Length: 148
Image 1: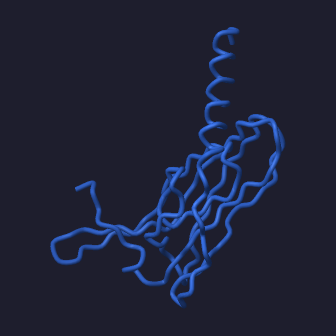
Image 2: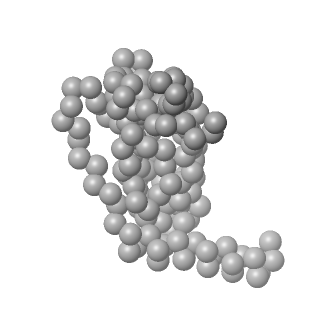
């Protein structure tokens, strides 16, 4: 890698650090609903710049759907996914399975599992935790399908 490209990569990482330092993580209060549970699917301690890993997980069979709640204002995540880590950690999380139903004339989808990865863009260490908020009630997890 040329010196110029290395400088660009380091600059991009530092930019992410500065942007992340001013963005506060969204609060994730525990649910007070018998139809909703939280399931921690992944937790790891990372060390140093460019520490990274992949993860995947699903809601349990008796609470199969991710809730339709947004838990992050500074990360792009599927609804119902809670990431707890430093702002300097970049994430990529996608839905991997879902269930579709037709109600009247509209099609709805509820996400059931995810997979993703993270990369640390700082020289420090910390923890990275992924928690899913899952529900047994289809209507608390469904979203109108937009791919029709």
